[in-house]
Image (cartoon, rainbow, N blue to C red):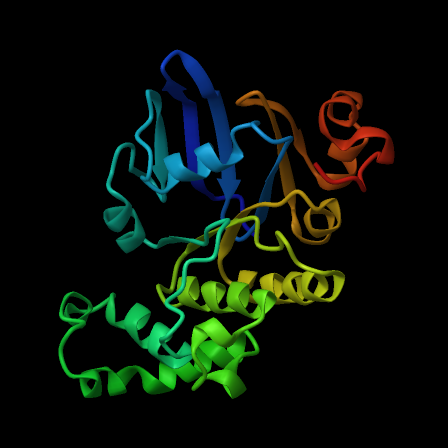
Length: 255
């Protein structure tokens, strides 16, 4: 962990026909930390993710990453700068094997990424890297299976490996434990801790057990605005947060 700012937004705002989904958000993410965004449904968390990764263009405000203004840049340009994200809904090719998924992701960082229709033997150079990434997320033994045969938690692990294939400095995880059982949640917590070593992570998750286990800093959003920010134990006891999001369980309830 360092005191260097890797990602910062200033007065970031996104309007949809007069409705402010994100309103004047000032966010500061320090290098080497895990930063969680929490809040009730409709708080603006996923919209903020989409702004940070170029899938939406801000109505106003700025986004700086590693000292560079990335406001309004395209998703592919942002990805090339070292930012990778996972999505709330899994998006995999059911017929492709796990290794093929990783080889395609690794090829995207080279000229081969734009010639994916050519002979698959060209992707053999990525085999060792693909295996290493699958091993990192606990899927190496399943590398030859089609993605469609995986259990839900395994699909989320594969998506994490795909994000890691871009070798990101900043990893954004949108609901990494959504829809998981207790065992998968605990496995994912351990996995995120592992991949967070040496990089910066911003995550959205409704599960306060996940947030409390992972986050160095928690930003609470409500109606598109920052309601509170700080360490998890401080934020979970903030009366405004308890009323707006955590409810009577005072830190253990879900949205």
